[in-house]
Amino acid sequence: MQTTNRPSRGATKFSRRRSFSSSKPHRGSFTGSRSRSAGGRRFGGAPTRSRGGRKMATFDPSRFININPMEEVTEVYTPKNTFSTFGLNKKLVETVHALGIETPTPIQDQIIPEILKGNDAVGLAETGTGKTAAFLLPLIEKTLKEHQRQTLILAPTRELAIQIQEELRSLTRGFRIFSTVCVGGVNIRQQIMGLRRPNQFIIGTPGRILDLIKRGHFKPEHTTTVVLDEADRMLDMGFIADMKEILSTTPKEKETLFFSATMSPATSALVIDFLKNPVTISVKKKDVTNSIEQDVVRYSKMGKFETLTSLFESPELSRVIIFGSMKHSVQKLAEQLNKEGISAESIHGNKSHGQRQQALKRFKAGSVRVLVATDVAARGIHVEDVSHVINYDLPNTFEDYVHRIGRTGRNFKKGKALTFISK
Image: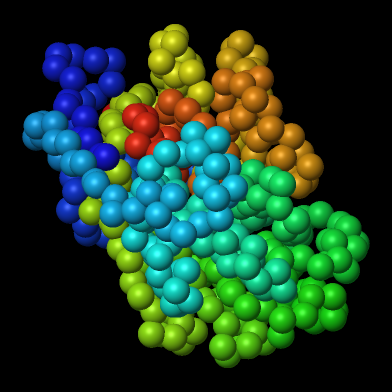
């Protein structure tokens, strides 16, 4: 069920409460002020150049917020299936229910039967709507019936790959199903050792998987299913050549599944090249789910950090992800917040894999109130009950904005997204 939040009446310390327009935005730059963020990017007409001379475009979501309040609308989705009627193993169904998942989400309801039939499939849905379980559940069921199956799951980031394995393990407790995660940024030796045992699921990032193939430690010719999770992001990150090379080494008769929240022309071309007569299941009604209330926060050029800390006077900001544009500014912001008594951890590319996992673990456990991150965390991180996402620095694209704020309002819970805009 999705709902559009009724805008609050009366003044707030933010701008007037607004609902995000459901129409697809045009690309373009905000025509308002031309100030600079802490990351040094100009928020104005044309893209500007960073110190290194590279053009840096930024997307300003405030332009696309509908200033007219919308009446609250409630849409109730009635699934055609239950987890019991899919034909899944009884113990697997019991595990799903024990995890507190009672009813299939729209994407699960519609695509699980297609995967069980052996069809190639494309699944499009907003973030936080259960896409991971939508492919894991039917693939686990197939593996229980045919233990020699091997599924390769490609993900854009190590965080997402690890999270997929965590969800796989929670769903397969008590079953003899094994998996190995193969990602960059960590010692490859342990992954090589993991690949020496029989694995029904190999989960990894394209660069590391291709490296292991070339070294002869991973045999892609045994792959029965390939899952491309967040394939559009993998393309954005420059993995297109790696993805094509990996897919070309797998058997032609394999099943291929494609899951994403967005579909670009490049991802459409990938579908045409590598999927066989795929069934497309799209449950996207709009780019941003109605469970996320969106607003902007106006700040003066000299008072940006003070504006941020004032927000934390409200206990509503109980578990918050703040997005910044650059590694060093994200690290500095986390340090500044801690000095102000606001407990924070950071995730960015200058941290080691272990440091990033430790920061994420502390945030998930509630040991810190805030996680400050670059866009490396926008895809794939799932933390229960994130109350707010704050865009401290503007995202570069509409897609980045969608995936950032998708860290809150997940599984149809309510969440808030605030974007800092200079006065």
